[in-house]
Length: 86
Image (cartoon, rainbow, N blue to C red):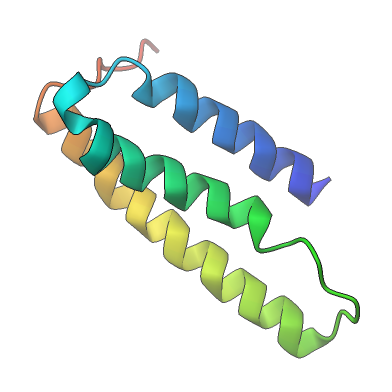
């Protein structure tokens, strides 16, 4: 369930960054996509799941989320992202 929500988030970031200017492909677009992909990626591959492992994965996810929280408004203020309709 958590992994699926993270994958849905990745898809949303890819949709959102699709309209960014081509000159941002290797800058903000890439940074946002890599940050989003790392969230579900860090959840895979653990043979033994311990509370320490879970804490570590949550810390990494929070770090990537923080990068995206900074990047998304940055895209808005520079005119790369259209305001969402309410």
